[in-house]
Image (cartoon, rainbow over all chains, first blue to last red; front, side, top):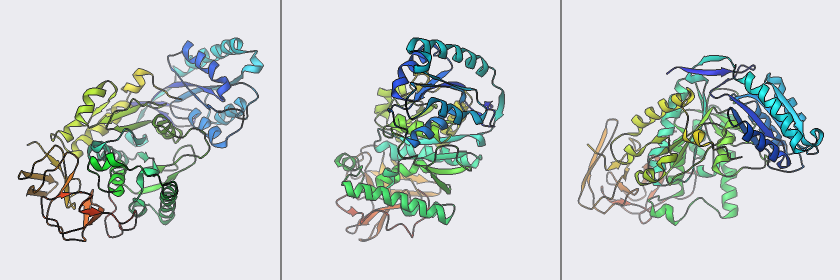
Length: 374
Length: 102
């Protein structure tokens, strides 16, 4: 399959071509949303839903998303007095060569003038973005993340293992693959440490999972309950292995804690920066992948999920009953495994083909529905 | 042939039911060049596990090629494997002797 990407001035290649409208504070979200409504085609919106204070993680995340491969240009909208200064966000994006401008509602003279000013900037940016250079892209250029949510017995048996197979295939093609959700990997410390590319990474992953275990022990809170046992899971380890199945089998290259592109190719665990203000929930998990450079995400669900984000989300479901119910939101049908008609290897290979199709431009359900969840 | 159970790793000593299975049924699972055919000794609900071979007390039960817990009693091939006869000691302490894959 031929993938034609969008070449950015910093050399990144995107699979989508968007002008990003970024609100730097909750106080400027209104203007950003109005601009998104005025120019729904070719734009995307995200921002920092917090208040006055400058939160370093949040600032870095806005910059990471503003310099994402799918961002052709960025308009930063601020109120004017917040710590996450709109000009500073724009200045941090500018070195990548992307067109970027900032407007402050206080300086523009209120909502209406800010919307007018922003509209004129967006018209310019959208026209320039439409002329972005198209270049051939290989699977090895891709960065993909996988998350799970609304999990059930079919997640660990089918959906998660096939994402692992697809992730392995991506890495074999020279690409980059990541999973997240440390709290769901309790008991996997030694396994991941053995997969570490070097001793530093081994130490780091042991520490990270030990921290997560300690948090769970301290709070007496584990992602474990009666429903899991009724569903057939015998131990927390067994449940964790079901989540770990997303990871495939390749060496672990590192733990991603700083937003931006992974330093090299291969398999990573993604944690994200603390203090970026909005961590929980599945859509945010997808955006965390984006902040680490992911072009698209796979999302496995058993019960059903509608999750979208700033990057295309391929929703994988293997539960035949739930598939009937949530078909409208599903992108990849893994039910043949549970129905006994296909294997993990076969469906994993088909899922890899779906990744390439989406990279080549095939729209996912979350994109068609306009899910962005900021 | 339609699979009614799934083997996730060739080294596993348990398989997982893909549908409700009944005691007395003969069930075959295959993965790569490994095949197990056993007669079930218990009913196995969807998503639950059964032993693929006899498992002595104290042996690790393996799923995904990884230890999910130890046998609390001697198990026979076809036995239902769950919290009544399998328990894990603690997270992350018992994986050294197993492969790195999951």
